[in-house]
Length: 469
Image (cartoon, rainbow, N blue to C red; front, side, top):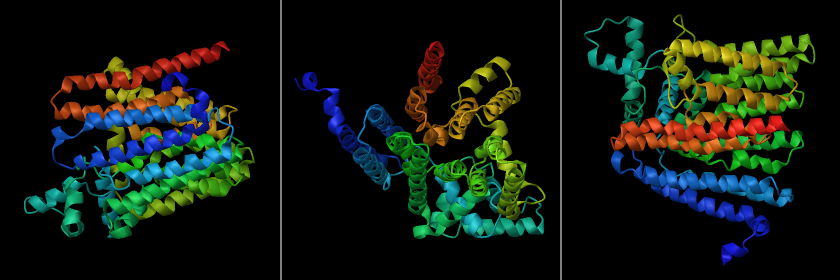
């Protein structure tokens, strides 16, 4: 009877409030479930299926909230609800254990190394471990012995340091995270006694700052501020940053800030903050032609000035980490040339070519062509950034769910239902762990079909429909 008389107008009246309350309960449940996700313990007993069930329900309510926002007129009242629950959802996950993620151990180890005045790019964790175990059997220079001894002193300084070191994933690879990220990680090592709590609060603050920048950008473009819900209530953002402690809110803050400053005609400050985005995660570098093309509209002299600002900012932050082996890029080169995980278009091209390196060249060519076209297009800079970051994600050999966060703030300006659907479907990535723990490895091959096929069908359908108009 209730459903028969329940109309869209009923939902519209207090819809966001009801969705917010239900979502908060779901986030609280997930936070409670996280206690069963303890590093190195009970893999087969982890409630991954229940977690995914709750997570997907959250996405359904998230999509419903966006549907409501696109039709609501009362901005001020509803914006307060959006912002209130945006903070509340994140607070619900603050005390949680990271669910199926361990990247934060690398961040915290990097922070300890950097804070002790040692170049974090020079040695992989395996090299440090090998020195401790086989130093009599391997010849080392005096300088190398001194550095590796210092690193092992950090490693065994206390129980927390030992845990961080032993839990670093891909220990054979030196860190890939740029210099400004290392500064943030160093601060996390001392903030609130170090550890995951301090890092989580720092990333939480960066995340809320990104939301603030989205609101400022929407206001500057005279777009309904309620559209910020696309970032503010995204379960992907909330889970991957607050729960899983991925550091993507750091580069994203500086990218959104630089975009806002450029829109507000402050090119020098824009390019400075854009430099910090590059120095936090290197993917921002591919947006350089877009920023330069926008600034060049004000004349070549202004472009030359901002180019100098960019060059010296990058140089100042990178210089302390540069050595004669250019080890600052060692881990990045390994990552860029060898990594492949959860990909879609890249996997198809690789299947057709049969060669990983040839596929990289083809994908690089496609992305370069898209970059050239977008740079010369007459679209506004926000749309250009959205298109390019989306293309980069879809063509990448590594499509981890949290990588999609890079363009979610810009999706607030141009909502796209296919991309929003993808943000939810990518949660199926976590099924891979369930199948591994229960020795169902053959089923892993099916995951990407369910992740990407509905997305690409909807994307192509919407593009064809748009062309018909």
